[in-house]
Image 1 (cartoon, helix red, strand yellow):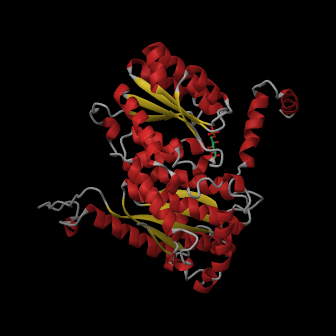
Image 2 (cartoon, rainbow, N blue to C red; image 1 turned 90 degrees about the horizontal axis):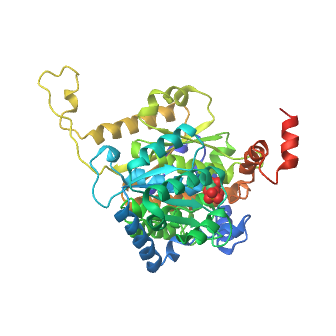
Image 3 (cartoon, rainbow, N blue to C red; image 1 turned 30 degrees about the vertical axis):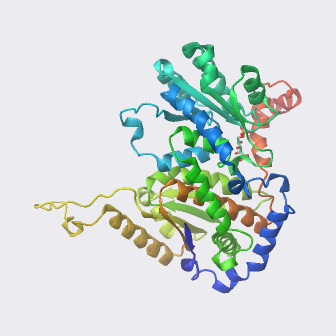
Amino acid sequence: MISLNIEKTFGFISKENVAAYEAKVKEAQDALENGTCKGNDFLGWLHLPSSITKEHLEDLKATAQILRENCEIVIVAGIGGSYLGARAVIETLSNSFAWLQEKKKNAPTILFAGHNIGEDYLYELTEYLKDKKFGVINISKSGTTTETALAFRLLKKQCEDQRGKEMAQKVIVAVTDAKKGAARITADKEDYKSFIIPDNVGGRFSVLTPVGLLPIAVAGFDIDKLVAGAVEMEKACGVDVPFEQNPAALYAATRNELYKNGKKIEILVNFNPKLHYVNEWWKQLYGESEGKEGKGIFPAAVDFSTDLHSMGQWIQEGERTIYETVISVEQPTHKLEVPNDAENLDGLNFLVGKRVDEVNKMAELGTQLAHVDGGVPNMRISVPTLNEECIGGLLYFFEKACGISGYLLGVNAFNQPGVEAYKKNMFALLNKPGYEEESKAIRARL
Ligand code: PA5
């Protein structure tokens, strides 16, 4: 089970002031439970883990198996909350060099599209797929997101041309709204297998719906265990768990107290490159949930040691408006020791016999102490190891803390009105039907 340590924030904020959040956090927890908070039509994520049925998981696994048996490559088309969660889990649990290794039968490589409009990206992807048996999971809650729809249009046609209409119908799966949107219309018309994204679960909170679970199952990971880890965390962060023992409550309270004390930027840190996309998923979760009404902690993220050699200087000595939250993995999956070298030309013989992870842990500890000395408060989230249970728990922990934290900040954590602004301009500039007035207005500004 993951745990949170906030001791290294106490030189910057007081224990008493964090403890003083107890009543407000209880109010937040109650408001989430009772559906009385802002954005209360999007609280389906709250008890999602414990409400997932065995039948639902079996249905997902059966569909995943069809894709695994019939595809060398599966493209997950989606953006934002319809993509980052799956990518975070798959990249955390995969071998770092999986894409370079010999392909195993019935174990497709997962690629991602629909999260950018790069012509080169899409050209190179479609070129790469030319001689491949590929399938597509088209994920969009609204069913109308341009980035995803555009990629899917290209992939659908290519899949049908290459594999025939009948096979395409088998290896294209939709994850979308029950009734509305173009993705739903297409899925129904083409008779694709489809899964529903519940109305009351927003994109960035949807990793434990088919949005995340289907691609993760196709990648060969155990979604039963992922969900079990989330269920355990749902209990550990529950409304009845005392404040000081509840990691989501403590994290939400501490980050709000830091924010109140001028720490406007949170940097999520990992010391394991497999967690890069967990950082990306977390940035969306907190950025889109809290950055509104002129408020909100700016969520940034780094991969250490890599970024110690690029961002380390800024973190150590730049403007003191930051704090760090480190995801620390207690046990790596594999064991590798530093070998002896009789000549010791590199001077590393003092490390002989130590595990590489011991060196990494000392880098982590040394960095924590240096950054705290430099004026950067530090929280530490310990994750026992990178397996399905732990990642399921970590994802739910961040979701629950985000719900509480948004309430403490006083915003609606479950909408994203600001995301629409760029879309409106883009549609106006592209002369999308229905945007005639906006087109005229925007052209006058150019
Ligand atoms: O969290 C959100 O709601 C967004 O990030 C959406 O997931 C993202 O914009 C994609 O939307 P859709 O799933 O409707 O294509």
